[in-house]
Length: 298
Image 1: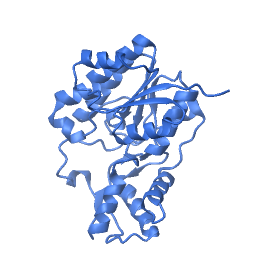
Image 2: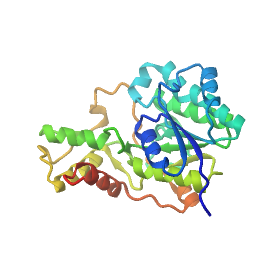
Image 3: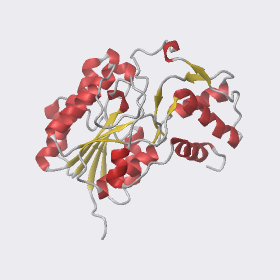
Image 4: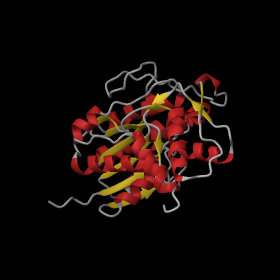
């Protein structure tokens, strides 16, 4: 049976995830992308609703919001609007017209005190404004539109913007000293893989609702994450001035404004049970990304 062509609206279409979704979905669905100038989640909720009511869609993916952890800490009102109040308005429109909503959230809704991968049912306890506003957004979206699916993701890389592994490579290409935190753990997530998982959920499991964790398998600290990026880059023959990422402690990072949770590795068992898909290991996903982006042939 042919796949039904969906009318999909992506909020945050200029960002890493939003732009990747547009590029991937456009070949088989009718996709509209809204950037900040088209719809800003800082707008008054009624203005947001009016803007959305003028658009025809049966799926809305909210990949927009305030994603800067430190910015959120110093501008709580704006962060709450972008991450909670605005998404709630979008969810109300989805509920009114019977559209499916996908709200992108974060592993930072967890406090990070444990040492076992976190399931969707584990207690949330954000330790900074960013996580608090994202958690508030999750709750407001699901209260307004119970059929919505809140997807928590972590350490996203790839797409049209530099991310942690790219910044590590940039430092290693220009500096002999590279370091990263070795006592904070989570799961890197390939934006390419994430787009595939979201697409499968939209097309094949549209009734999935509530919360679901999406990330690549395995876990690591920032230092291990960065070191593997350098290892793959060295195989490619990139002119690295540093081949090692030295470990430092989270407490030694003095330029962070907001607190960071220590351990937020996500358990993806619900996603695996819902879809039958087992996410590939983050090392394989990162290796493919670096080989594609940085090889002389790529």
